[in-house]
Length: 67
Length: 537
Ligand SMILES: Cc1cc2nc3c(=O)[nH]c(=O)nc-3n(C[C@H](O)[C@H](O)[C@H](O)COP(=O)(O)OP(=O)(O)OC[C@H]3O[C@@H](n4cnc5c(N)ncnc54)[C@H](O)[C@@H]3O)c2cc1C
Image 1: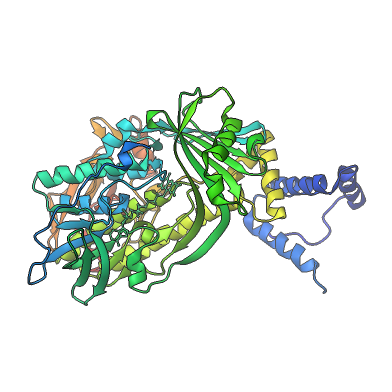
Image 2: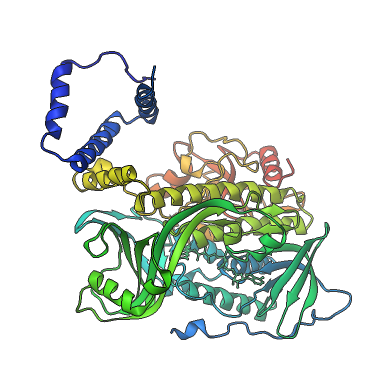
């Protein structure tokens, strides 16, 4: 069974990051929020595994708190 | 207003039980002549068990209530002898369309599978549903079955006396006492009996109001379920349009929480709302208007010794998914055969605890589904609305998002996985959909359908293996039914009951659920499974 990858896995991290920023350019807050939500759903479907998504949620939550 | 609301169906007449000494004792007393109480009474009476139904009213229930009745419930009604009448009068529909804003985002077909006698759903006003059940009860009564409906009999007190239940009942001629061996409380969501017994009913209130309007109109809308999220005519809210018999349409408009209910019900408020939805040139007449709020909750336990709760008295859901009356009918279906075996002394009272565990499981499934639908339809936070709208936007473009759209997960029968009545699955290569605990799916056979041949008794279904003579285990009859199945010609039977197995033997309960299954006939295993299915193993 695979588990959530939390080690560097992006081929070109700076490019991916720039793509994310670019996608939001010119959008207001509501439009950006909507885009993020659509993106999360698209990615969740691509992952297709509830367990991994649960781990991802956990990781995202944890990172929002002081270490 | 529709005359049907005002016509007494079982007007009060004096019963010899009134004022008699000693106090009369009845086998089963059912409180509430709603869909669930009537179904339970008919089922009992068909099996020869005395059933007295008490209702404080004598008419159909008031106003707009249930309209969607699911296939499984029609199958239960077939067993009760009134399914055909419901289907003949009802509006059959399979297609649902979902709109977001002013555009259609997708559509679904509920019954892509053939070989079922009954459609996925019919729409039928609850007042017709109840009328036909009352007529069926009266027909049974005229044929000498032990069933009686007592109108204007209001239950005032209920006391469990250990070996019976004592009731005090008010009538137009004053109160009387009655005893029951067993009491089934089908007295609705506000259950006075639950309150009399000091029992809890906890759950979640949804802070939202819905305007339900039943309108009579000649309109060109097709026979489909149309659901709108955030439509232009009801900004930020939802709407539903659904056809009923007699040219009546159900319109359901979400109004939000902070509203003046009395004012919103007035025709001068309602009519402009409906015109905005239907267009100015559509002529319609209001049959009924009401405003509802929703709750999802259940009792902790449905059985309290000799008092058993069924239907809305035991559990309540939001209407999204049509799981109210539909699940109540499954309660009655689950309870009656067990009660009969206990009354006949063929099973211990502990069998009734499996009613509790199985239907609590069913209620939790319904509450989960209907709460999730309600959360999708009426997002409670800004973030949940953002996700909801994201799903709807994606669903227009990509198939992956469509299963996430939740405009009501329509009622499906519950599979009692893990029930104490099930025996371990001895046919693992059989289809998952007919594993122990599952309701039997219908199949078209050469001469008719499978389901009408099942139910009321335990049935031993033997496919591609010889059936034994009729069996009896501890006085419980087991009716054999042999079928042969060529997977080439009857693919549905093979897919639904054989899977990869060449042959199969199924032990089926009187409510048409699978209790056990095997690859071949073995009398010892079958006897053990039957005892287990009746709480004796
Ligand atoms: C707007 C709306 C839409 C719905 N749509 C659907 C749908 O599409 N599909 C679906 O399956 N369900 C639907 N439901 C739910 C459905 O209406 C209920 O689940 C169903 O009526 C429950 O049946 P019941 O027999 O348990 O209780 P009820 O129908 O409430 O009957 C209870 C009976 O008990 C009687 N009673 C109460 N107290 C006493 C007393 N002290 N003495 C004697 N009698 C008493 C009452 O008079 C009443 O007749 C809907 C509900 C609403 C409000």
